[in-house]
Image 1 (cartoon, rainbow, N blue to C red):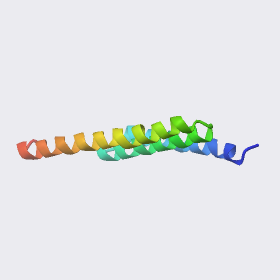
Image 2 (cartoon, one colour; image 1 turned 135 degrees about the horizontal axis):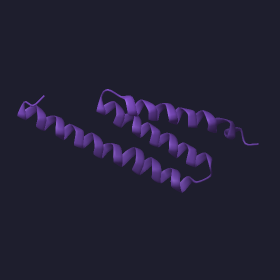
Image 3 (tube, one colour; image 1 turned 45 degrees about the vertical axis):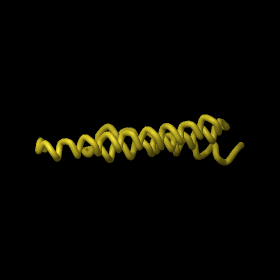
Image 4 (cartoon, rainbow, N blue to C red; image 1 turned 180 degrees about the vertical axis):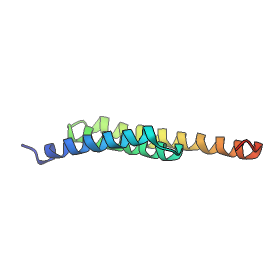
Amino acid sequence: MNPCEFCIPFIILLTWIAAVYVIFAKKIMHAVIVTGFVSLIASVLFLLMKAPDVALTEASIGAGLTIAIFVFAIRKIEQKEGKDGKR
């Protein structure tokens, strides 16, 4: 049996904990960052399941590009709200 197979339940538990944190996060930026972490964990799981192409795609698009777009959008919204004085 592959020694990495014992890691899979721990990784899945870590994913669940991070996903629950995203639901109850008080700050939206924390939720976005942890969402990227969940995506990286998913890419590790794909790699352990012998799907390196899916793992690479998940890491680059799910954790990289999507999080960058979310952070950019949140920063723009915060800047606009700061100029309007709506905070």
